Amino acid sequence: MQRPWPSLLLAAFLAAPSLLAETVLMKAKVPNAAIPQGEVRLVRRGGEAVVQTCLQTRFPGRVFAKISGSERENWPGSAEMETYVGTLAEALDHYRQLPAGSMLLIDFVAGPEGNRVDFLFPPAPVWRSLPLSADYVRKNQEHILADSFGKQANEAIAALRTLHANGESHGE
Picture 1 (cartoon, rainbow, N blue to C red):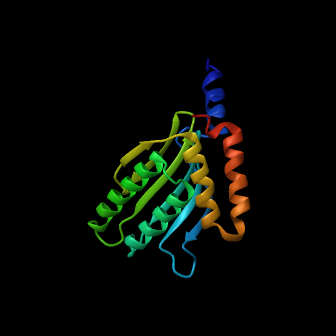
Picture 2: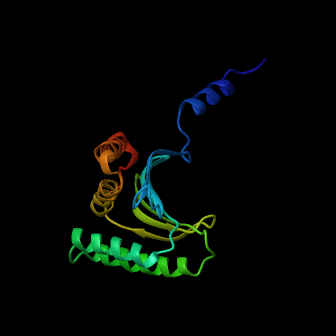
Picture 3: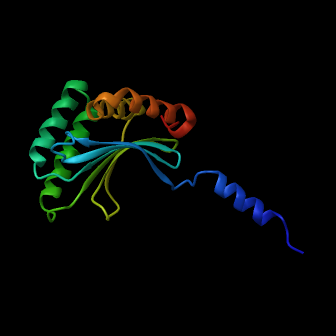
């Protein structure tokens, strides 16, 4: 006699998103579609809301200048900003030493396990992870979407806020 519980577990598994599942909800070329140097993605990863910047650029110095300038404007005097900008500089120095075609991922992650910025060089695992405040991570998520999505910025920010409201980012 076969027990019904395995099929119930399978149905529950299929109905619920996997904790490790990653779904790209929106994406935009940066700085624009005409001269892309990367892509910004709004991602749902399990229980986390992620704004991911994928850089594949020949101009890491320009990328650093743009990002660090925005950070200093948005977060004057912030210790978290200084930590992030310092780690970004190190990551871009490392990126410069990699073969052409390599990628740097910068993930602003808000989730039930906390808030952080992860730096990755695929296919390697996380290179560096910075635990940061929910305020810093969430506001930066919105700034990045606003800067990257042009006419779709409001839609992207609304989707991010929906992820936050639906519990994808309870961590404080």
